[in-house]
Length: 557
Image (cartoon, rainbow, N blue to C red; front, side, top):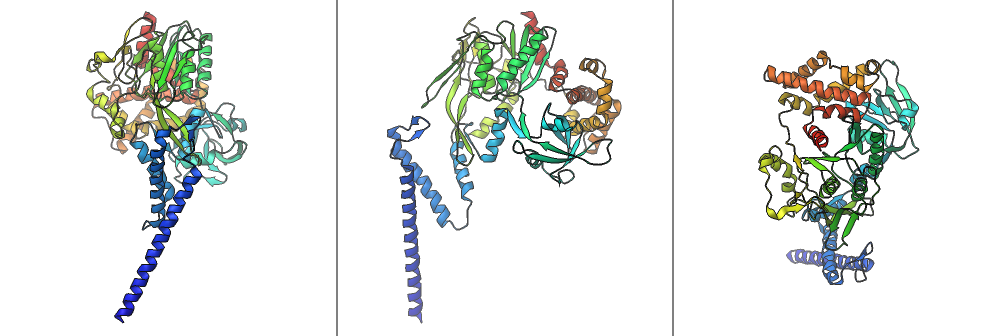
């Protein structure tokens, strides 16, 4: 009996060994076949750039290790695995060991990332917000598909294709997914309108919807215009040129370019916009990298604003292309830069599209301003979290509130190209005129109520009830700006809601300050809902210290 058991055990072990050897052989053949398909011994190119021969052998070995590890895990790991997720995790792990801006995005995230920079998407064309769990239309896009069929500001979209989206706790992302779709497809919408008992139904033919970069373009004074844009997309240059033309027709002589919180975008868009202000041939920016050719971007000249004075506004969130534009204006002595040191994102990412729609954005070079300053702030490879905390660290060190806390060594001093003024490198663009962050502008209880969406929700409900009455009472923005006062009843309701959520002012002084904050902000929000973002910023910037300083400097030159 014992001998029989031993014989069975040995037979089983031989069988397992044979199976293991077979699987290992299959693994080796699979890897070999893969490499025959890749043909790595042939000249390998990314685009038109061949990989150097002295790197090929090491590259082949490293890729072979990655492929073998992946095949081993998929064939022999004790539990089932999601090979797609493992691959994405591996890519992310590699990129995390590089610089802070090289990144991988899956197909869905890539689409979200690229849509704002492409300047359009396909959908029904409404600006909306969520009031509790219902989609409330703030404004239909002018001449867009929703406006064409009669959807109005204040409408509630409660269903899409006979599926309820209101009162069912559906996520904002899921609602947007249902509203968007290919151009020419139909969105069958159920709409509840104030004053109408029954649900209204609209068939909206989806279309290309523009995504505008320019938030605001208006006259700050009779002679000074302001243009604010939030990124550098494919359409931004054309939008800025149109805004300049419109403001010139209103009497603009000098211009404020507002790049505060502008996160950047396309390098070419920054170069095209800079050309509107600089003489032909002026250097705008240049790039240098290890294995890609250096590039120079120079002004094409003949731009839309070659004569008037210019002030550029930046802050700690102005990054990338925003820093290229402000750095070129500063280094070429074309204008003054006002605000706080910019973010310091001076690395060039090249997008590599993957077959499944995902993308790797790989850093290939660095940006340099015309005077030779590197825009990129210092970083340690693999320490992305420390890099992400940089702005917080600046605040804690006092840099955002006190110019005296900022010191530069002589090695970071540069000279502008026309007037020889001293400017500074070391990461980001340091403004010519520093304006500290005002940390006392808003009452503590106001900030807490704002963070919990109490303020914005109160405004949405107020506009929902009073939009028609307000539009009739204030036919022009000028009249609204001069006469409108926020009702005390609304202020009391906001404080009452705050108390329900354990937020209340500590004393009468804080209550008074919070009241002033509400009157100021909600008036601007009402203007936005009745007109557009230019009117919103025209009110918001009345008390903005950075804008006021820019106006003062332009008027004093």
